[in-house]
Image (cartoon, rainbow, N blue to C red):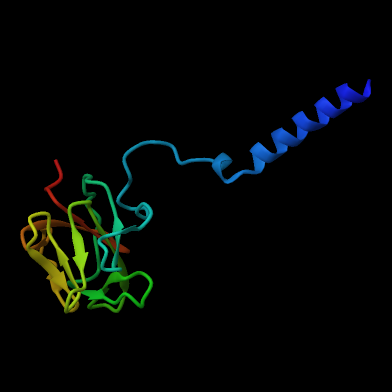
Length: 156
């Protein structure tokens, strides 16, 4: 090979290596509806307040039995995650919200519904009724052993 051919080959190999190792080359998840039994998508800022809500898509709700009778919402921007729930059995649950919910920490931190109404604050208790799903200020709450999914509309 001539010098120019070797140089061209070296540049091409180096380019392939750089592209192959770039962050944009990371594999992506396959498209599809999220399963409520798996973790939610990446957390997104809920507002300029600094409270980050874990997000979920609007989805169906599996009939999964849970061993808790109530869950208490906790909000603390110094914690990870910022919003979670403690159950009456001592378990910590992730709390996932569809996109219409926002957070505000002007005064006491609160979660607001899609219409701007207060839906939860630190200490809000969600009681799990027998043989039914609970509501949080009218919004559907899907129960899972390790998470709550607060949805703007009822599952179809």
